[in-house]
Length: 405
Image (cartoon, rainbow, N blue to C red):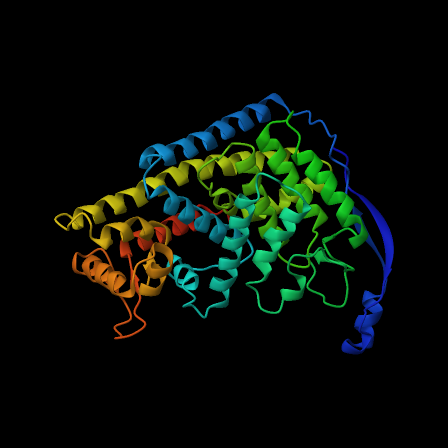
């Protein structure tokens, strides 16, 4: 793969009055911004071991997808909620790569619009971006990418004007100086180059003569190199990877927690992106293969642990009449382990009284716990499901490779 080329431009702080004279002098001068390489017709020459790695990882992804269906049954009402919680888990991991950490409970509360935590609201935006990615996976084009990023940024107050539009300004990475890009680790392409580069990347992604996981890794790395947005590039790029996993048939039913695998060595992941920009696609392909295997293995455990919690809850409801609304609520708790009556009314079409009766039955049987202690605006949660989700997140943190380790 050809290495990035660069072009030289001149920079002077746009608002010099905001900075000292010395800072303005330091930031004034030439800088080099990236010129994206064309990849639409690129033919990779992968070594045999990397090719075998990609094949094994792809098989693991498809096996995980099949396991999710077989573990529940294709007609099981839990399959939809399971797909939902896997998507939310992937969104949380993708956000954590960007230092946005949130517990399973806080994320579930944010879905009910019951959380004031900024991180939780931002991760919900990532959930919406992932949902858009899967919804639009049949037709991957520039409009689809804009829709993903729009859902993401609408959840971040102050960024609304940048939601769903390609940037029209310069951005850079690895330099906290607000005065300018000089000294940054990477300066993204000038904004007029974005449109053609995105179309070239999409042409590469649409090919059917390459291993799908190779396309996903390279398209993701190219997207991050183009850096087409003011904010949300990493999370949108990982949403794009999910869309391609779906469209390429590697994960037809379940959302693969791919970002969990990337999160185990986030520093290495960023280093592989730099290697890609230097002309070596091997490390990022290997990184995605390793992340895919990790996601498939740990995702299988997560699915099985959640299924066991559901089976335990079903046993707790034994003896309850088969038409009771609590049975309808139970599968929903996999996808949304914190609920209120309003949520059940909206999602299941229950009346307020029926929803409250179901919540009472689930509480009396020990399935749910009411945590507010209030007479009004009550919220119930499934402790077992929340524990499984938080344990999964904790296992990822334990597996993470840290600097100096």
